[in-house]
Every structure is written in C-alpha cells, then in structure tokens.
Length: 219
Image (tube, rainbow, N blue to C red; front, side, top):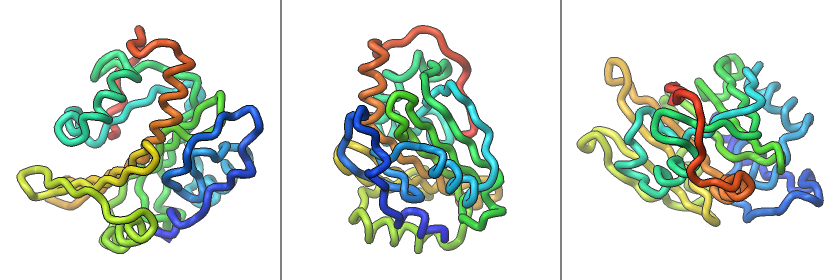
C-alpha cells in the first residue's frame, strides 16, 4: 500500500465550473492538482491515514528537514517560499486549510507523517508533505519512476545522502534521504503544486506579505 498511494488517478469530475483548471501533474491517494478536497476525499483520507489535526487558516512553508536545504539544492523552490512568506522564520497565514496526519502507522500506509494544505478558493491542493522511515522505500521510488520517469538526482551531505526530484507542468515532486538519529535513513517527500500556489499569490496581491508567525519546525 505504501507505493500504491501514488497510483490512483485524480478525479477531475470533482472540479466545479468556477475553478480555473491547471495542468495535471503529481498525485497522492488519487488527489491531483485539480481535485477538490470535498467530503468524499476527506473521508477517504481519514480511512487510510487516521484522524487529523485541522488548521483552517494555514501558513505555507516549503521547508524540508532544516532551513537552508532548498537554498542549497532547489533555489527556485527557495525563492517561491520567500515569496509566500515574510522571511525564513516568519510565515504568512493564508485562506487555506492544513490537515496533519500523525498516526498514519495504524493504517499501514508506510508514512509516519502526512500533511496536506488545500486552497479555500479552489478547494484544490497547494502542498503535500510526507515523512517515511521504511526499508521498502526503493520499491516505492521505483513505482514513482514508472509513473513519472527518471528523476534528477543530487548527492547531499557529502555524498552520504541524496535528493530526487521530478518536474511536470511546472509542479515539483521531491524525495530527500537524510540520516537521522543513529544514522538511520529518513525520507522527506514533498509535492509542490506550483501552479496553484501562483494563483494564490496572484489573489493575495502581494509577493512580499507582512505579518506572520514562527516557522513550524516539523519539516
């Protein structure tokens, strides 16, 4: 089930007429760039991932594990994160809901943590983050490669770790392997729906927002 979560197809029939469509890209549990997070989708997420903490007005931080990672390896994402927020430690809040799933092990999904942020105006996803510590991650990555092609691979931490990235229609999917406690591998995954984030920024009318709150350090 770990890798099967990325094999579903997004349901474009759920997109209301008033929502401006964007190019399809990456999917998670059948959720794609044009999927509206309605009651049916929420029920499906809860059935697979368990209960969630809900923040109805969320910040949007494109951070993986530690500050500075994106600046070092994905400068375009770092610039997008800067446009979305005040600075590296102060994040602006948006009309977007964040669902945080922390008890995902009970559902045997293979993920230790899942975070989904979706936009109120469109109802569509803006950002999905995951954390995994599983030995079968190579099989999962193989399934992603079969679906989206070979990624760009970047050695990190002096070659001890690595980062993989896929780009499709402007959106980005990143998988990062880093060493955690006792040198145990940890895998950080992030799907950035760039097209939806650009729509959000356009509606907000400001690329340099004022006001915010301290960065959540989970990622």
